[in-house]
Length: 55
Image (cartoon, rainbow, N blue to C red; front, side, top):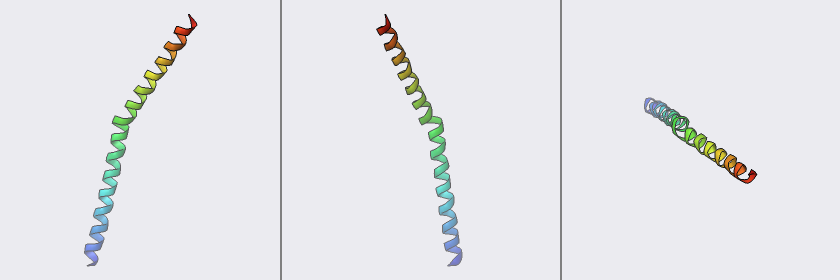
């Protein structure tokens, strides 16, 4: 029984660590670049609005 419990705990820990690493990787490769692009587009939009009002 002791071997089962230790194996179960080890397996659960490894699974949770793997899922956390996967989520971190997806965040770095997919989500953050999209947010950076959105911020860049918004900055360009603000600059264009300022230029159009200055004329």
